[in-house]
Image 1: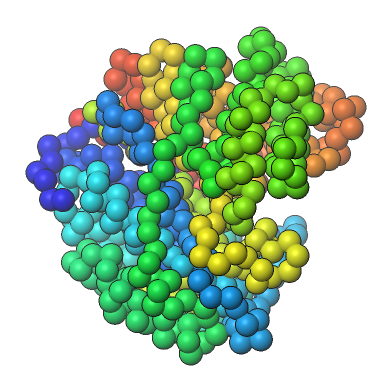
Image 2: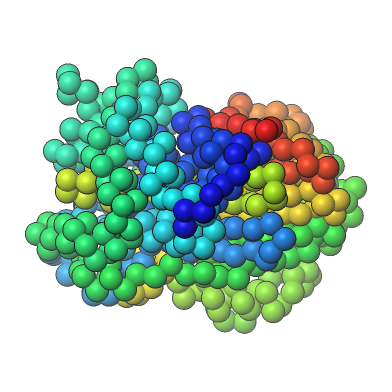
Length: 523
């Protein structure tokens, strides 16, 4: 849009990497608003967090311009229009090694869904930004060209998905050092082709990716290498602008990602159950509070399963939840395939009260880069949650559902919050607990983020280090198989959040579980 911004806008950012935060801060210093800043951080995350974010993936932005209603931008990936011939696909398994366990992922060009990231970048810019795109991509292009030094957590993620980073010659050229070893902490990842691509897109717009040279490269790659995308898949991709789901929680207003994605509606479901309990029962870190949270998480799991299994299913929770919302969940989520894997999140607020919560994912990446462009393509069609009866059975031309749940809240005192998390199916429990910490326990953002967490899934209750020692025994007595984690762990998500208090004070916290970073610009 290129409107003249004010100089030195106040603001705060929280995200998954210091370089991502620095990009947003640079744009705030230029006078950009929260939406300029979150777009700059988005681009920078592609350079600094390449396992989690890419222009070849997709995501969501929950935006609330100051004194206006919020809007959800769905730029997640789309399934192809054509049915696959499995025998013709480049689609194969790899084992990701987490150190204590391994997990099989499917990669290859045949796992690539229609990317939405570039479409989202420009749709958000057209609607909400104040600075030109050429300025917004500058920090990311500089970072990609000069390189980013890998941290220990980056090295860990590289090791986990090393078969993907070594899958093709172009990927090996990017992620291996001169000695042929995977880049390690302390070494620099440089992505000059990604820098060129960011600058080209800033100059030519989204059409370059969906109808121009980048589109032709992607279609040719799919035709020659066992993929599924064609010209129509790209040219007809659309960013969906959706009305967010809004709920009242004890006089606070919570806004989150609506159907067809499932994470936000599950968080709203859990809040509805919690709202029926006396606030005193939710004491932070108390046995009674943990027992209540465990019961709510368990009922939310049941509702999620039942909503997928049968029309008209009712939850076994004393009808604590509004039937209309459960029906909406059943109708709008049940028919969409789901995705719940590797993600990162960016939250930004500026001094004018503009709020941005953006969640991004590339799956793990398919192992193949868009030829000559330095853009790792997604592997969303290799997600097991899409294919309970076997792979390649997804519905054609359908937006994927997601557990990602960028969320906003306004407290009964007028404080504004923007939060979100990575962490697969732990996203909903991580965001839920941080909301409870902020709204019920009146914690500041750092304390709310760092407080130890619980995650209940099926018959298992995972307890993070720092919870009362008696909690494991109490939950075992309720029939759960308890798993005690000795300290903070990335298993429990990575909630990055920002706040603007009712009196105008800014704060931010990046989750230490996932190498989070935060910056506050006071003037």
